Length: 182
Ligand SMILES: [Fe+2]
Image 1 (cartoon, helix red, strand yellow):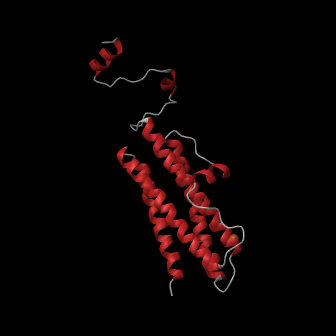
Image 2: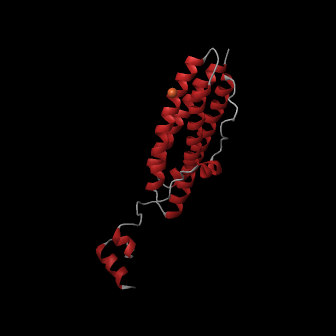
Image 3: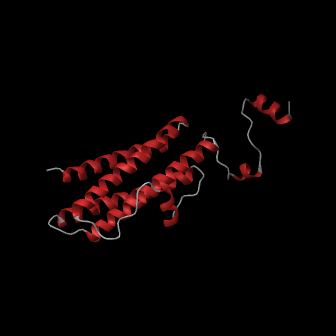
């Protein structure tokens, strides 16, 4: 038995790393192993890319919507892009809290996102609504796919964030879908 193990048994404490990093407080020891933290962070990176892409598409549609529904949709899209813009920050900062860098470039977002960029030619108003329904549903699927990882690692803050995002995306998809019904 090494000296330090004997000491930890004597003090009843688990052996801790004594590396320079640990002393400097730069390693992460929150009770979630590195592999789990990385897997959750990479799921959250996909969620960030999806959320950012949907944000930009919704803002684009706010600018470019035309037709008799202009007032309604212009205002509705503003509410939605404002909410999405507010969501990217907590997702990115959760990734940082787990110890990974947060993606923040268009090249990374294209690589990571499950949804496509907005079409270059602005679609008709109801086609915009259809694209946004698909977008919110896709982001909901991405968020839902991360739950098993968060649950298995007892990562409650991530599970809480995912629950909040799912609530918004499922509700927004319902509201947009309602516009498409007769
Ligand atoms: Fe505006």
